Structure formats: structure tokens, C-alpha cells
Amino acid sequence: MNLSRPARIALRTAAGLGFAAIYLPLLLVLLGSLNPDRSASWPPPGLTLDWWAAAWDNEGAREALWTSVRAGLAATAVALLLGTLIAFAVQRYTFFGREAVSFAVVLPIALPGIVTGIALNSAFGTVLEPLGVGLGMFTVVVGHATFCIVVVFNNVVARLRRLPGSYEEAAMDLGAHTFRVFRDITFPLLRSALLAGGLLAFALSFDEIVVTTFTAGPGVQTLPVWIFNNMTRPQQAPVVNVVAAALVLLSVIPIYAAQRLSSDTPGGGRV
Image 1 (cartoon, rainbow, N blue to C red):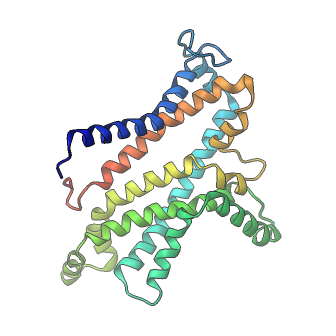
Image 2: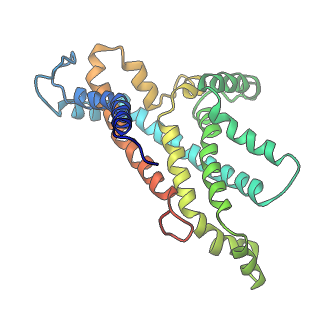
Image 3: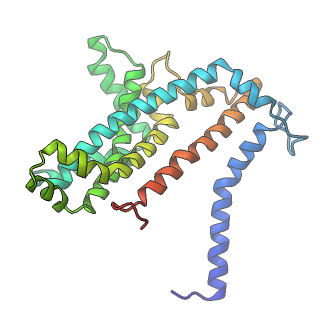
């Protein structure tokens, strides 16, 4: 499609404004983490890495980081298992209610986080508390897995749609049993989709705060919750800026890797 010069200028201007609205605040957070002034004066009188060292020595931030990593890894493992199984069932088999199952799996990612959090909190209080299981790491992992499953499911279903079933059928005709076919044929073709879905699921879980607030007990504090709780404390403001900046930088890695892996063709080439 050919656009006139004014139209191109208008589109580029709109795109530039959109990117500025997204990335300028992130840049300000990064500059704030290097500001030697505790009061976050602007412009910064200089640059320093002292707050980064202080953040590393902050025991509360380190514990919250480790909690987020554990919750993210556990939720990702659950999402990979359940999301992959559901994707195979929906894509490779025909049964009554298949579309309803697909819709039910995808729905949690579209629901407001506060609705999901309230619903899970109520369900845990009704079902688990009578059994002696209170809010804690387990309930956080379950809450995160509800939406992490969606990204794994979507990645695996998209890849299965591009894989002809003739590969598995040919292997079975040659005498390979079901698990051998999965190990030698199906899994290598799905590997990049699984890895991409896992990376996205971990990224979603790592920075989730709304559902976590409703599903975590008093002894569980993830890194996003720690940041939120310390934002209003003047003495902690520089450390919060450092942690937020580190999260921005670290989040780029799984998202970029997932984007690259999702663009892989089954044969390993580029789309």
C-alpha cells in the first residue's frame, strides 16, 4: 500500500509518541536508580551505583526475589504440563465440547486480575482452609498457573496446527510406539514452542501482583509486592528504583527469547 508523504509523517509521529509514552517512564526509572540524591531530585546532580549495592544488600528484596523465582518456576512447570496436554487434546482429537474447553482455557487471561484474585481467594478459603491448607506459596503457584497455562496452550496449539500428522503416522507405520514417536518426532518439533511458552509464562508470573495479593499469605511476599509495599517509604525509594530498573532489564531477556523462538518454523528456519 502506497501512502502519501503527509500520511507517512503522521504515522511515524504517532508511532514515535506511542513509543515515547511506553519507554520514557522506564528510562526515568533507570535514571532514578542512578540518582545520588535520596529525594529523587530532577535533573539528577550526578550518577552513582551506590543504590545498586544497597539494593543487593537488602535482605527483604533478596528474599522477595527468591520467592518470585520459585513461584515463577513452579507455575511455569504446571503450565507446561497442563497447557501441553490440553493443546494436544484440543488440536489432535475431536470430541463433544472441544470448543468450550478451548474457550475455558483461554478465558482466564482475558478476565481482570482482581476478579481472578477475588474468586481464587474465595475458593481457597472455602475448599482449602477446612482441610488445614492456608494461603501461602502453594496458593500463589495455583493462582499464577491459571493464566500461565494460556500462553503455553496458545504456543503449542499454534505449532501443532502447522505440523502435519503424517510425521507421527509414518513413524508408527515403521513400528515406533507412542512414546518413541513423541520423543523422536513430536517433541523436537515442539521444543521451541514449549520453550517460548515457558519463558512467557515465567515472565507473566514473575511480575504479577494483583492475583498474588489475593492468594499469598502473610509470610509470602514476591518482588512486585515488595516494590508496591515500599514505594511510599522515603528511605526505600532509591532501592525501589533500583529493583524496578533491574526488573525492566531482566524482563527483556525472556520476552526477547520467546519472541525469537516463536518465530521459528518447525524445520528450524525463519518465517
